[in-house]
Image (cartoon, rainbow, N blue to C red; front, side, top):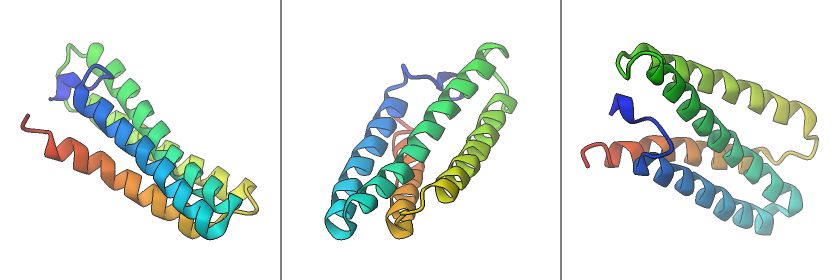
Length: 126
């Protein structure tokens, strides 16, 4: 499993599609509830995790390819880079988007964050 962190892994691709679908669905719901700014806030919350997941895959894949596909350090480094990216991106969003609808953004953010774990854990044994 550690050596198969790439966009060729169907579980990772499935997880990215799930995150994208949830982002779009929550944006539609938030748009109906809170208008345009609710939809944009939901999109920003979902894209935060979608981009962080892509960064995780690329950093982990790069690290694994340079360590002969073994070791836990490339995965831990990728997770650290992902967490820092999430923190920076959320900070930028909250600083510069004045009309942010915080419940829409954080709800979409949390659901897409949990999707990362749920899809990968439910397909770990397959």
